[in-house]
Image 1: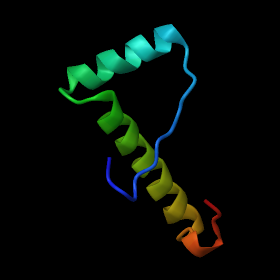
Image 2 (image 1 turned 90 degrees about the horizontal axis):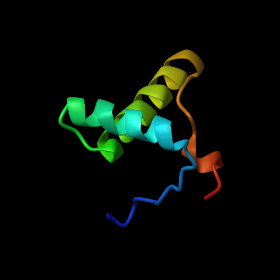
Image 3 (image 1 turned 135 degrees about the vertical axis):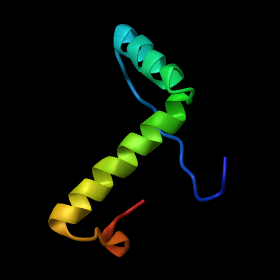
Length: 60
C-alpha cells in the first residue's frame, strides 16, 4: 500500500459480496480495482454537478 493510501473496512452481505466478486472477475479485475473505479466515478459525477470538493476543508 502506498503512503497516501488508506484502508477502508466495509460491512457487506455475503451474497452481495459473492455477486460483486463475480462482476469483478467477469471483467478480469479485482474487487478492489472495481470498487475504486466505482468510487472515482461517484466522486466525479458529484463534482460535475456540485463543483470541485475542496480537500482543505476535509478532516482526516
